[in-house]
Image (cartoon, rainbow, N blue to C red):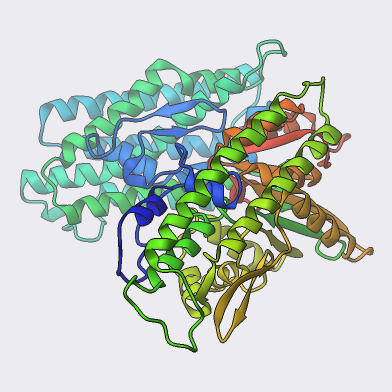
Length: 617
């Protein structure tokens, strides 16, 4: 809304540079979504002040510009630590049905790791020039020694012996080698250990060491709080409650914060280039932590990743997705409107006889404003009228379907007004394709689809179902990212001499059209294979498809979607807690299942969660 309203008010002759900065628009249907703003859960990394957590709680963090490096890096690398949350080891641990042999192996490997952690703290303490910093690092080292004692108590409490003479596995070795190499100065741009001549050089090395240790502390503090929030007091005592309580404790939370504070203190006089080195060390440590979790032997059925039990010879993983504000940061109708306004003739410009007659840019702004105002008012009335209907008990799919038939009639009339107005006339197909190529997708979206397509172990089919008026915009967006196998189901412009005539081939205009397209795709699939369907969407227009799919994933925080869904008995469950519940039901004897029309939809805040759940880390 913000960008388009600016266009409606301000004359512009600028080139097509409207995708240079992300902006956010509401999520319902095409015109409404580009013209009504909402407080998005997604912002650029520099604007974050809080992070939505998988347990639906919120981890509040001060503005990173004003705060320290640790907090800033934690926010920046949220996609990495999200992967850690969705590893089979963490999911089984949270569910309480992790096999004890696996936990024993983990404790054994963690002992090797913690001993290296103690060594790294010792070396950082030696390098720190500030007395207060030395004391702080000493305290952290002692806390790790206490953590090792806790591991001993696990051994005694559960009656198993740590593997005598056990050796660290390859993931543990990579992690400990990295820590100790960093602590001894084997970092790019740092002098050899014996040549640290000045206090500044020593302090810098201490900062690098803390940079490599901070992500582990913050990740475990996060996991402790996250898992503690999911413990059900009405159930039997969680077998790993002691482990969870330790990392959720105030003392461990304080230790994680102290590590970050020390990193800030030691880094205060470093250059921007040296801060960049710390950032790289932080990310590398986070990746090694994820590898550490993934290396734990899991000899049991797990709900993650979803693709784990996939047999490409017999099954097809059907991935369906909406496009506008599910994949994109900007609604496509806003982009098409901007192309129309920017390329429109000025008031004093005389069009040649062979040109397609078009409105001036000023008239376009005015017409868009009138259309958007009418749409906004009518849409809100339509939604409110649906919500005035009687609210039944339980999941009522038939009632929802009937209600959305009413909304579909409204959507088609609104589209007809747009077409009749002539605002879509005269757009050059090359401008549209260029806009698609430059379209900013949600963080992690392209990577998810690229990974799904390139995974040779999967038999995957990807379909994008969209209200977008122009399928060419969608296809160019995906093809620019090397994703050419996406099947696009959207409306299409009708062209004459590469210019849009203002008319469209109507294919997907409403929730009813979307769900019918979804069903038609499945009906045309091979009957010789089983399909597991996943639908990812963000708006009311996706609601029927989300419910029909075996797994429906809602991304973002559309209030109209949740209000309407809840009115008809739809349950919205944060994905991670939902998976923990599924994992609890999963045993060697009983299989969990995913089935459409259950009335349950899973919510996520970003594509990293979707990637970790479906494809794994």
